[in-house]
Image (cartoon, rainbow, N blue to C red; front, top):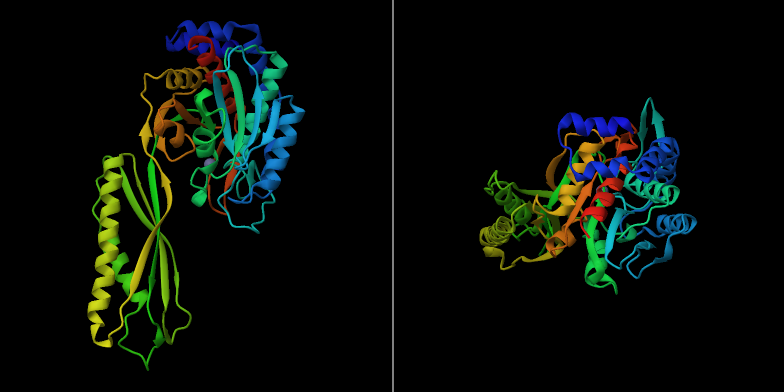
Length: 411
Ligand SMILES: [Zn+2]
């Protein structure tokens, strides 16, 4: 572990934190993590091969429940929402949460078999977030090995509902409904891979399903009636032209569309799903208002063009996902701890915005960050997802150091 100290010295970033790296138990834990790197990657593959589409995380939850018990966590349970919980008692009840999400952003039936291609592992969910789950188990093992006594109680969580329409329901439940929610003082989600990237801000996300309905009919015989598909097209044309600021970054996307039954039938129904994002809550509200306007005008235009038929389309907009925006100050102890830890493991840390489980605590004023599980990867959320365990041990090392730094300096 001399390299770690050297890096700090060379960077001139010596502080009280450096004392942490001199501690024998800390050095032991960091060495343990590096020495067990291959087993952690094997664990990651095992986890990835258990399918866990959002709302269908049960089988993978059972696996994590067994792992938590094997590693000696206490009060291990699967809560009402489906999250797997396990505690590691500290001197106080103030609780520091380390979480990784169980679910994958793929439909039921997806083949999660992991394949090897050169130094890459291929498979849906191999990185996102099997890496985070495996890194979390590795951290627990390393803490057992080093016999850490900590001030904070640690709560390890393998949570449901991070992806897609899960709408962060696993972590939301922890912070809004669990019996111990008031004891949760800080939160780290292990998600993504790069240990130099510290997510300190949650991008706000709103998602709508827009459904348009009409009488339908024969394409020739009933020509002149309004069409939900034509109206949706008119609406989407307006959505595509919505103006958004570059800063604060604000985005929109129509990601799915469906409707109609035959080429020679006027559709009875058409629906599409829209994803809106902004790091700024005010901008998210503004783009949401523009979306409402675009849909209203699109439907109106179609109804007006086909007014002679006497038929009108109706529409409804359903909010299917709502992830709050927010940001933790750079001066917050959790951010300081994460930045220091990332530097201590040899990275040039940077802070970033993203939509992750940390959105929930951040929006409620509980300090939270999302950190990488180590290694490198790409094509997340696609069937071509890959992961390469390059210096993968640095992920769990960085998260462990973040907790230890926070725990020793910020009671
Ligand atoms: Zn993820």
